[in-house]
Image 1: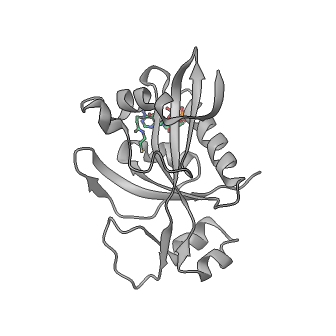
Image 2: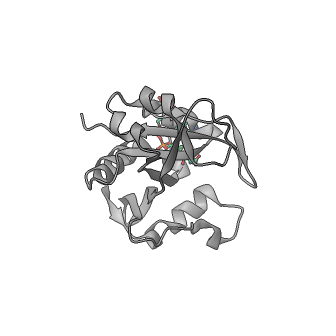
Length: 179
Ligand SMILES: CC(C)(COP(=O)(O)OP(=O)(O)OC[C@H]1O[C@@H](n2cnc3c(N)ncnc32)[C@H](O)[C@@H]1OP(=O)(O)O)[C@@H](O)C(=O)NCCC(=O)NCCS
């Protein structure tokens, strides 16, 4: 197996099979995939991607507990941030948190549950953190995938919300710490 950054074209087929199987192939392309700051990662076996994920620079607003939010607003509450990071004081002072959005996390059906998703997410978060933009990562997690993210140290920061055509989701966040 080989794990590395890759081009988005190398993972579209896996994304489509696992995340958009019932939909046209083009729905496996996401807005932002081709931004120069976006990073795509995969674990390959025999030349095919078996696990993939993408990271897009998408910042979050930091808001106070008293502020009302709509489910689709890209924000994190101040206390949620302090819960995931004792070292977040400088980030919390600002109104915006530099952050990466994790998208397109997918493991080929026949190799799910073998620890490969965990290996790739650790590798990608470590690599992306190292460029100095941000070590905060968030995602809109499918309800079924929430235990996977929790096992990897992510926390829910929203109520459940619906993504039309896909289903119930929770927004989750983590801060990568190199141990
Ligand atoms: C979620 C997903 C990416 C996890 O990848 P993976 O390679 O299977 O993950 P791992 O083997 O590292 O799993 C570690 C933990 O995640 C959870 N998990 C793994 N596969 C799961 C599944 N299909 N459903 C629910 N939880 C799962 C388990 O808690 C597992 O812990 P355990 O081994 O102690 O039971 C993968 O199952 C997948 O592609 N699912 C379908 C697509 C999807 O939902 N993607 C996420 C979109 S937000």
